[in-house]
Length: 95
Image (cartoon, rainbow, N blue to C red; front, side, top):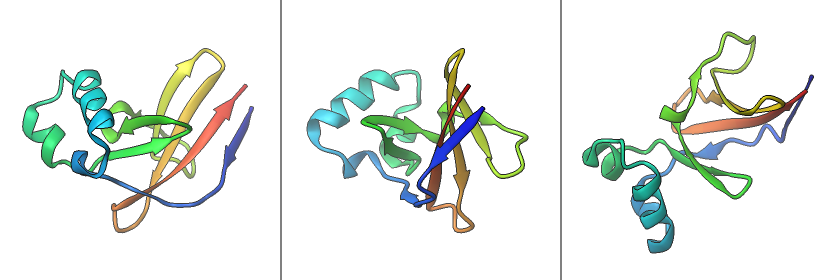
């Protein structure tokens, strides 16, 4: 099992920080979220060409990582919130 990360904090973004095209895609992909959560929550970030939200991740009991999102049986995206909770470090775990 290996984890790849650049250890570079990525800013958590609001919906308004994205292009109109990305905003439309986010609204469609996250239609299960309350409208106010989509509009006013700064939990979005971009990683490897995809847009994620902190609510996509489940709590992870690893030594360093705070959350995990399984992509398939062989891979997962891991996150670690920074101390100010305005940024996230992202890693990619593969088997």
